[in-house]
Length: 378
Image (cartoon, one colour):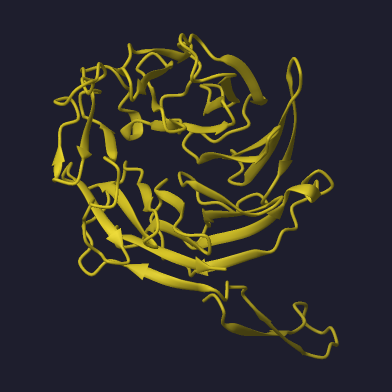
């Protein structure tokens, strides 16, 4: 168990050899500024669901949404453990239906309702066959400052479809951000923005990490993204995790699960005319449970924390110093076991959310199939 001390006695393994028994004690590292979070009566999480969340500004609370095995969408507010939306500015929640349509709900403080009934709210992607349903489908979104948002998804042809919304004009037409055949049906999507530049990354059918960018996601007309090659063929597991984080104004990092059940990281530097990158292992082989997700959060300048599900179905975390990754070809970052063996489900439902300037919450699916979490205070 994390935080417990274990005594080990060493004895000879070959009969007849002389040796003196040696006793040694070690402890499994565990964070000291962490508390557990749980629901009183938690609805179960669907095996093909990926959770999502929002923080409520100025309240030290956050909202989590997930799909149930029955096909319902559940939500809870932590730490209040109730579903209220009065503090939000009309949040939108989207999901992929069993027919491949994308549906959603909006809450403007008077309860949940369809987002297609108000001015400029009609959305063109609520049609069967819009999105792939493999492994539950994959979606991601990106805010465009205070002006709008872009919704991305993987379509049945392996393209990354998208649709952009502006406060002034509503939803625009659906178009491809990445071309057909570029995305594996079971890939996760990860998006981020640095200034006005938008980035999107996915796993290709042959296991490469690929993506694209728009230099100005607010421009009047957008077409296919400028392609970005992150990692070569056979770099990524077919059903593993994928996430990304901004390092600084010129650099981003992409993290993914490898076929060796480890986590690799690639840093991409934006030059005047192209990208250059380098790739490093972040954890050792067989340190990650296959088919699970990755969560990453920037804790302070040039450092981040990474969470994942270990081979023993435990929740693990490591801290990474970006300035030292290039000189660390062999992973030797200290690993913390935050919750012990047999505590987590084999799922990609793993997320991290900033709650306040001093609090970060991490949520996962526990062994019983319910939402559970950890709260970190700095």
